[in-house]
Length: 279
Ligand SMILES: Nc1ncnc2c1ncn2[C@@H]1O[C@H](COP(=O)(O)OP(=O)(O)O)[C@@H](O)[C@H]1O
Ligand SMILES: [Mg+2]
Image 1 (cartoon, protein in one colour):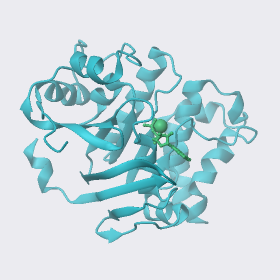
Image 2 (tube, protein in one colour):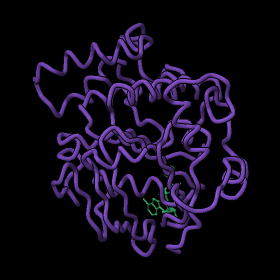
Image 3 (cartoon, helix red, strand yellow):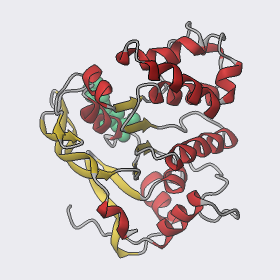
């Protein structure tokens, strides 16, 4: 996949630090995400994954380092300004407005773009991608199933016209079969050209989607896919996550069917994981 290097870098994070008082949650993370690439950040609970996304999106002002989007420095910008620029976060636990309708939750995603005509067009596109959201248009978001709420949260993110969509734990609390549906949706978005940064405890999910995996531990990237020794998926799960969160994933490595997502998975399996010399 050397061709990807030729594509422009959309998101560049350099030596990012995020602290909450004395708690240093992110300790110098760097990454460069190219157009239409998908990075997965995996790691145990408390590793700093959400804090990384908070620092990138502007939810938390970084204590150090830089974030640039399409070559423009956006470090410490307000979240709303970043959303307008296309740096969009689908937060952990969805954070929907549960008493509002599905439709209104989606429209809130387009709110930063005001009366832009594209908002109506995007609404149609999102409802085509997730037909259940069209069916349940008037239903209160809080009454949707977990999987439907995740679709809605992703749909709301799409309504902001992301250049990079960051998704925090899309599989959280979902049954394996529902996780499969979420993975299918994210794959379809990639096919349509979206650039993704996915944070997950579910390594299988991350592997099924991502071109490149980063393993986060105590605020730092300690392993990443690249040159080095071969580390299998199972070994990765055992080493970092104690086997938790690994639902069956149709199309994940070891699965039978083959499409673009599987190709990514297969190349991932063949990809070697470096020994993490940076530690
Ligand atoms: N708002 C906050 N205030 C203080 N500490 C926090 C806050 N959010 C997260 N932390 C701490 O930062 C560390 C990383 O947390 P988090 O980024 O949520 O990890 P993850 O998403 O990988 O589970 C943890 O030690 C957590 O307790
Ligand atoms: Mg988290």
